[in-house]
Image 1 (cartoon, rainbow, N blue to C red):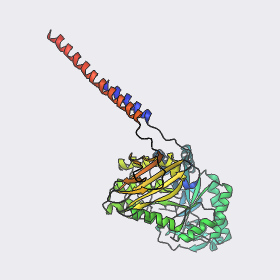
Image 2: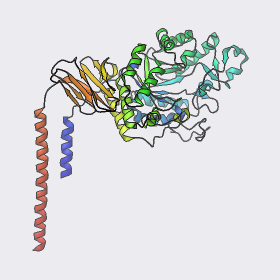
Image 3: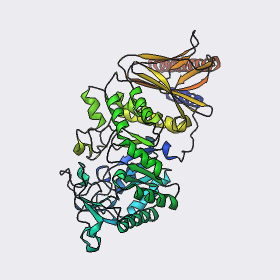
Image 4: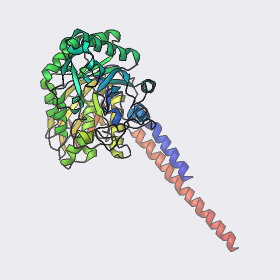
Length: 504
C-alpha cells in the first residue's frame, strides 16, 4: 500500500513538471554537435573481421569497424550528438589503421567492413535524424598506391610531405596543380558523394593544396548537393590563411587550433578567467569555425587537468557547458564521455574503454546536451558577453522571445556579477542547479554561483511565490502522511486482533 502511494505521488509530481518543447534540429551546420571517430580505435562490433588485427601493436589495426559505430549510435544521441565525423574509409596499405595511407581511392577498407556495411551505417544514422560526414583525403596517396608506379603519371607527385604527422609518413603528396591529377581527385570526390548518402566531407589539410583546386572542388560538390557539408581541416596554425579559404571557397567551416588550445589551457586549471577564450575568439572575428578541446595527435584534456589535481567531473562540466552553450558547432572527440586519458598521440588513439567511465559525468553530459537541443537560443541565438568577475564569466543568448544566461565560474571561490540591463519585474530561473535570481534593492540582478560550477538561466517574469502550487504540494504531502499513519494504525489493530484470537 505504501509503495502504491509513493508511486502515485511521484506520478502527480511528474505531471506538474513543465517539459520544455523539443524543437526540430536546425539544418545549419553552425548548430551541429559533431562526434569525431577514429574508426579502427572506436568499437569492435563485427568479430568476424580479422585481417591485420594486433591490439598489442599501437601502429596496427585494433578492430574498430562500421558495426561498432552502429552499436553506439543510441548512446551518442543521448549526449546530444547530431553528426558523426569518421576518419577515411578508403582501402589502405598495411597498418594504415588511420585511413591516410590510401592504396585505392575507390574501395572501402575491408578492415572496417564492406560497402554494404557502410551503407547500413549511413542508413542507421539517418534513421535517428543524425548526419554523417567522412574525412576525405585528397592531397596524399600511399607510397604503395599503383598510381605512383604508373609511368604516365610521373608528374603527379611532389614527394613525401614535410610534416610531423606520422599518419603522412608513408604517403606521397599529389601535385594538384597538374590538371590530370586534379581531375582525378575531383572524380574521386564526386564518386563518394554520389555512391553514398553521406552528408558531407571533412577535407584534410586544405591549406596544403592550391586554393584554386579547393575553390573548384568545393564548388563542384556544392553544385551537386547545395546542402552538402564541407569542413576544412588545416595542417598549419595560420588562421589568416584558413579564414581566407573560407571566404574564397565554398567551405562551411574550418578548425581553429589557437582557440582550442586557449580553451584547453584555460579550463585545465582553476582561477583562469574564461573571458580569455572569448577574447581570443573576438580578436579574430571568426565565426566559421568549430570548437574542439581534444584531438588524436595530442595529450588528452583529461590528462592535462589531472596534472593540476582537478576533478574530472568539475573540469568537464565547465568545458562541456562552454562548448554546448556558446555559438558555433562543437566537435566532441571519441572517449570524451568516459572521460578518456592519454599522455600522447599513441595513448589518445587507443580503443575507447567503454567498460569504464564516470556516471556523474555521463549524466551531466546528457543534461547539458538536452538543454542545447531543447532551447533554440543556445543553438542559434544572438550572443552577448555580459562580463567577468575574478574567474566567473557570464554571457547572454537570445532568440526571438527566448532569453538565456550562462554563468561559468572557473575560480576557486564563489563570485557574482550584477546584470544592470534587465527591466524590472523579471527573474532568472536556473535550470541546472535550481538557482533563482530576482531584482535586488539597487534594481540589479546579481548572478552568483559557487566555485568551479556552472548554471544556465532562463529569463521570465517574476511571479513571486506560487502559493497555489505550494498549497497543493503541501496538501498532497499531508494526505500522504495521513494515509501512512492510518495504514500503520490499521496494521497494528489487525495484529492485536490476531494476538487476542491466539490467546483465546
